[in-house]
Image (cartoon, rainbow, N blue to C red; front, side, top):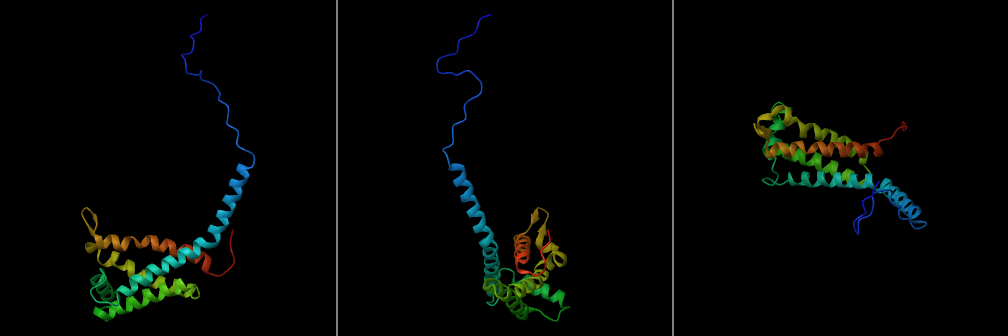
Length: 175
């Protein structure tokens, strides 16, 4: 039986030695990872609460100024449907601005986060109502319009609000 000699520079296939990890590197990695986890557990939800609050405060403030918010006509039409025509026009924009700005500021402050989440839940009713009332303005044959995308992106904000609520709401923890 003859063996084929290996070509110069080519090693035969087989188990390769695992390079040794210097003593303590894994321990330092685990310690660093644990420290990062503790930092994230302490600060990630408060950071999300503040970011969510800022988004609502900024978009709410825009509605105080006529012609600035890209959803003015949608806000007016939605209030008209929800209130059976009693509220519309500039009043609808001001009410929406007050609701969104209040929710945002309560979340940013952290002091009234629970109340801010309640106000935010009310805002979400208005935010998602156009999906039922005005689907023709939010969707076309090829997919969502720009206005539809503006409304649909709020699904992410709902998820963020749920995470913030998991920390802000009182009651016994369940496992």
